[in-house]
Length: 319
Image (cartoon, rainbow, N blue to C red; front, top):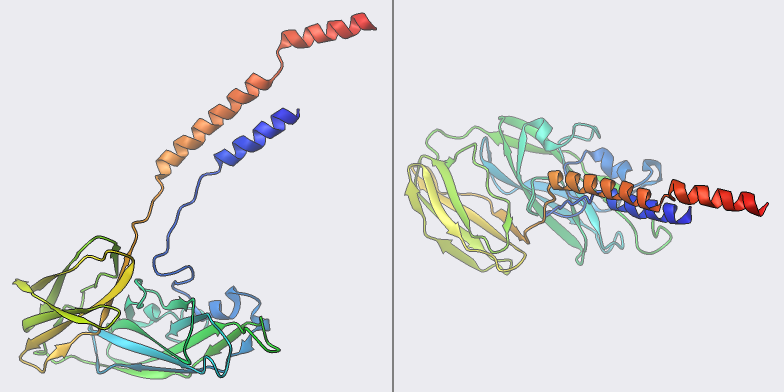
């Protein structure tokens, strides 16, 4: 009986399929409502109010249909709280439901970490001020509000181990109509956000009313390089060099035309090691094979009828 139970446990462990997944932007990065900051990491009623100072501003004029850099700044990281990790939300309201910017006419072109999320995490914080930028695009003209929210812990003092949550005031963003003759990126353009290590990246930047386009890219050190571009109809092409290891570079475009020179925000491109994806069909066949193997073992370990009868006859004769 013990042998049967042991075999059953082993086979059942083999029957559980492996679940393989990856998240190149980080474990917690994602599209999250503000409610997550208040409750998904614990009881919302136990959260204390964060004393961090939160601000938000665009880098320049926000044109409708064009990428806009929105920079969040968080101050007081060492003086107000002793923390080494922090989660940051970019929100369109404080309703705690339906407050992701994509629900209010924004597209998230880049979260600065290789994804298109409104919530990102820093696993280490080593300065008193933290700045982080998103690249958004609005498809609607007019006034829009954006908020920044944070959640974090506390490493020392009487509040050590307690969760903290904070949310900013509303920051008003004016989305302007774009002049008809102003050179610009096609409103439907989506920049690449991630790639595998060892792969170069071909940029095909579709533009409107641009007579010349120069592409630039920079390393994390800040060293900037220009790329030679070739025009193919309204697409300006250039190739970003491959990365030899996991890293992040940034690139932007400088557009000339009838209007004043336009420079896009810096787009983030993250290089990651190629991931391994499980074949669901193969896993199903593997489970079936394990199941057949299990029943085979059960049949092998089951005592034969002949041996059972011989044992019964032996016992009766002994009595």
